[in-house]
Image (cartoon, rainbow, N blue to C red; front, top):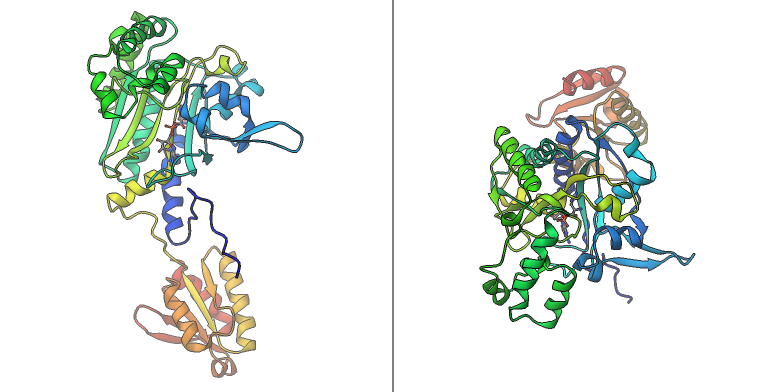
Length: 421
Ligand code: HAM
């Protein structure tokens, strides 16, 4: 016997009824974006590899270890997107959106792929809701972006989450800070791999979770203490706007995100019920990304929320969202003639916007009534052979068990009036 095929390692299937929760999370996270004037975009699931190697950054684990990169049959190097921002920026540049009204506000939702070591909350295929506000460098926009992320989580009913916030400076102050950090790291006892990382991007060492490294970083210089006047003013303004919006945060001067493009405002949302993979979302400003991809010198800010992890957070807090409600009406026909009537009735009800279902396959009365109960319908229409001979169907209230005979010609209207209210 050949072995059964399974979903690839690190991936999973989302099946009913759990999938209803998944959809509800996705909808709830995106609704605030639509209300704030963000427009929906779709970009390809794969891009030229350079979009990510140049966009996300050569020092990141994402680019060096985690990308699904392959040559297509035409010999082009393509990569399954490990995140959605670089592709959106590629589209923004390609379609010259910067020549229109700014900021350009975009959102999307879809699959991302990273060859990571799978564990609870960390998968090789996952779903992100991503939003970006492009072309304007205004701290009020940073605050809007952060606030929309918070709103999505609040709308889901989540409370046990925290906003981590910092500023990573920009081209005017990062180089000097980098020098200071390199000088500090030089004096530490670090392995070769870590030294190599430090050479490409010393900030990444701050993010090293190993206790022996963390212990040596106690007195490391912090970017927030070395911000230029303009970066500091920007960060102060962002925090003022957030305060005005009633949003609280935790200062996180050691926060280094896993992607290289961040400048200035940088943030992460963590949930306290999730264990090691606690980041349910993250983002920030990326003033150099467009230029890195060959575009004009425009800034951007945005975030991505992990839908799968947010769903875990929703479960961790025991929230009752997206529970499948089932259909409103269920039709149980007995015999071939009744079945024709059932098919017609279900079709009419669905056309009228009422959710309805019936049985397929030869189920018998008992099996069919079980299916009716499982369907979640409040009412069933049972059409037996004797009923049909009498020109009626039985409209049954599945909650009380009461039933009444209704002439077949009136069934549609009666069901509609009963369950459609
Ligand atoms: P990120 O922090 O790499 O940022 O990912 C955002 C979120 O995606 C994470 O907080 C997490 O919830 C989810 N996520 C990431 N990797 C995995 C995984 N392997 N399994 C399950 N969930 C995962 C970005 O991707 C940036 N593009 C965000 C951004 C938008 N920055 C600016 N604009």
